[in-house]
Length: 380
Length: 178
Image (cartoon, rainbow over all chains, first blue to last red; front, side, top):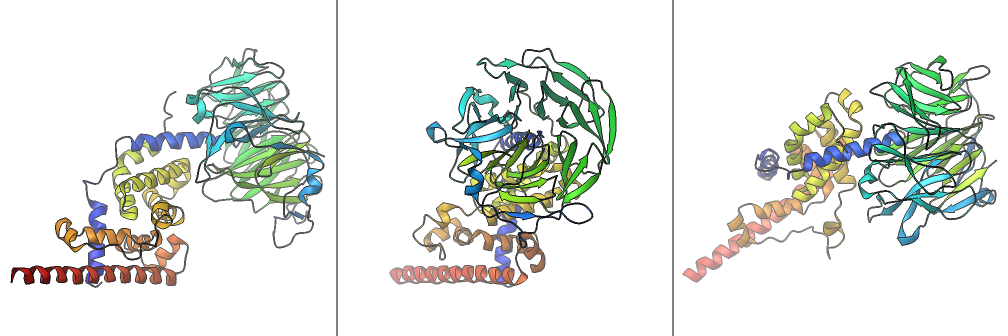
C-alpha cells in the first residue's frame, strides 16, 4: 500500500471502530418491529386456496408440454411452444381495475372459489414501495372496480398481511384478532377465539380455519357468528382444503387431518423450513428450494416434481405462494415491498406450464392474475 | 398489540447493532443513510433468520447485504441525480481543511460513487481480495480493480489539488507577512 492507500484505510477503519459512532435510540426496536411485520406478511402468502384453471398469460407467454420422469418439464424461456396474446385471454375474463379513489391502488390478497376477490388499498411511494392503507375492498366475480366493504384502524395495518374469502365469510386480521363479514351484510364481527397474529387462516367451504403452532391446535368456526371450536393438531398448519387440514409434523412428513371426523393420513413430503404449501380438492402441492412438487391424494396417489425452476426463486425480498385448484397448481412470487413478481401455472391434466409476470391465485374453477393496471379473473 | 418474540435474532440485534451501524456509516458516509441501510439489511436478515443462522456467520451476511443494498439501491438522488454535475471533483477548501483536519479527505471519499466506496471498504476495512470483492458485488475481479484504481486516482487528484491550494495559500500568507 502506498501513502494514499494507508490514509484511506486509516480513515475508514477509524470510522468503523469509533465507539462514538452509534445509532440513534430506537433503531433496534424499529428493526425488530419491521422484521416481525415482514414475517407476518410472508406467512400470509403461504396461504393456500383451492381452485383451478388453465394456463393463461400476459405477454409474452410460453407454454411447455409435459415430459420427463417427474412429469412436466421445468419452464425454459428459450423454448416456447405456444404463445397466447393478452387480448385473446381478456375477452374470456372479467377485468378488475386496480385504480381506487384518492390515487390509491387495489392490492388483491385472496381469491374465493365464488370469484370474490378480497384486498386492501395501497399507496405507492417514489421508490415503488406499496404502503398499506385503511380499508377492506371487495371485487368480482363480475368485471368492475372494487368496492369498500369495511374499515380497518390505522393501528392494524401492520397486521394486514393476509386475508381469506369464501362463499360464507370474508376474514382479515385486526391486531391479534380476526374480523369477519358475511356476504350480504355490512356489519363486521370479531371471531371469538384468539389468533396469534402470525398464523395463516383459511375459509374452506363453510368453515373458517386457523392454527396455533405453539399450542399445536387448530380452530374452526362455522361462520362469523359461530362459536369456534379447538382441537389438537400434530404440527404447524400449512394448508386447508376440502374439509382437510394439513400439518407439517416432520421435515419429511405432512399429516392430513379431516376436519369432520378427525381421521389422519400421513404423507411423505421432504421439505425444508422454507417450504410453502397449498392444497386443493385431491391435491397437495409445495414449493421448496426452487422446485414445485405435487402430491395427488386420490387415484394413484402419485407424487411428482412438476417444475424445477420457479419465478424469482431464491431472490431476496420475494415471497412465494402456492394455490391449488381442481386441475391447476399456481406458484406465485411477489416482492414484499413493491408487489412485483411472477407466476407459474401448471395444468395438472396436461402438464402444460405457463409463466407470466405478476402474481396469480387459483380458487374453484377460477384464476386471478395481476396484469399491472388491473386483475383478470378467468373461468375455463 | 404485543411485540412478537424474535428470540436469538433479537439478541443478535441487541449485541451487534452498534458495530453494524458503524460499518453502515463507513459504507455510506452519512448517519441517516447508515441507519436506513442497517435497518433494511437487518430486517431482511431477520425475516430469513433461520436460514441465515445455519450459515454460522450472520454478521457477515448482514454486512454483505448492506454492501449489495448500497451498490444496487442506495444511489441517493441528492448525490447522483439532483446535482448539476456528477461530484467527480469534490470541492476542496484548504482553509476549511486546516480547521477540520481531514474533512476534505472525507468529502472526497463521500464524493465517490457507492460502488467505488464499497470496493474501498471491502478492500481496506474487510481486507478482502479482489476476487472475494468481486463475489460480493457480483462482478468480475477486473471490474473491482478498475473501480479501485479510479477511486484512488480521484482521491489522489483531490489530495494533490488540496496540497497545491494549501501551498498557494501558505505562500500568499508568507508574501503578505513579508
